[in-house]
Image (tube, rainbow, N blue to C red; front, side, top):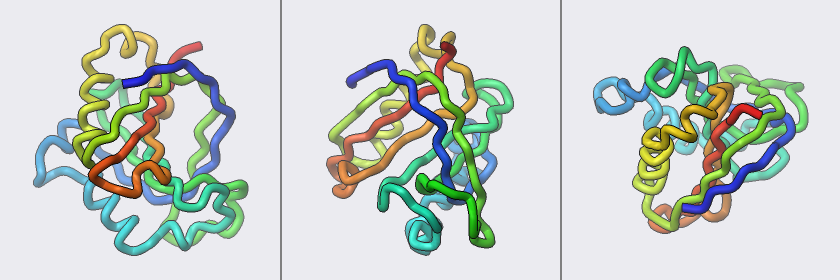
Length: 161
């Protein structure tokens, strides 16, 4: 797993979201992320997003944390845009503020294993956890995720300056 520090400017996104927690996600009967992702892709919701910047580059964002990774948070899936004008019904706008990140790159590996494995490493890393700001963390799925058996995944963990 590759790790680097980086600062990114504000990012504007349009997509859909759901409120959940890691505890809920560990139980199939209460998990919401999988069905939200399926709804997004099965209904080709990205094609309904206006003002897209990077076609077919999907952001999965964890934000509005109740506390830390043990509390509730909002899971968002969508694409980067340059305007919130013409927001389609049923979609939400999300702005990730300028912030510092620890960028982790994992893979190649099969989905969802490549994603689960990297998050387990994040949660187990007490040094990283002590620096997290819990504003917004996100995964980026681009052309390196086209083959679901060989996904290369970038995760950006928001950290204090």
